[in-house]
Length: 191
Image (cartoon, rainbow, N blue to C red; front, side, top):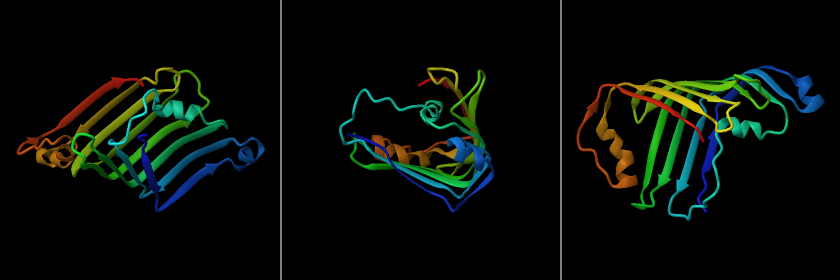
């Protein structure tokens, strides 16, 4: 059945204020900050393989809740990261690629033991298909059983023909001309 193939690499990592004593006493993982230098994530999926229905992909707060030992990381910083998402279309049989480059992000409040009002937050900047992403903000509540979230994003100008590198192989749609000055997105949702 379809599944994601994910490859992760990083040029290095720095950890600040790791509680070694708590880790060796009861496997508690507590740290103030982690910095990932030039991390790369490559995710791939082949949509021509049969889809397994009834399997729900968990949102970040639910994934952290499944970790059995106590976990609390105040922040994770990503410096000069890159994300590449590849998908083979079940419509065209061809592979499309979405590339996010020059990614700088801060993920705050990663935990699996929480109190009311706790949320994970992600703020980021980078380039999507070469166009600047000036602001990306994601907030998801730990207390919400439906994993309610809010996402806001703002992109700068873009030659819309660059979207054809994704739409053509995935949906056989070509964008012949167009420019955007600014793109805004405000999304609220849940699982």
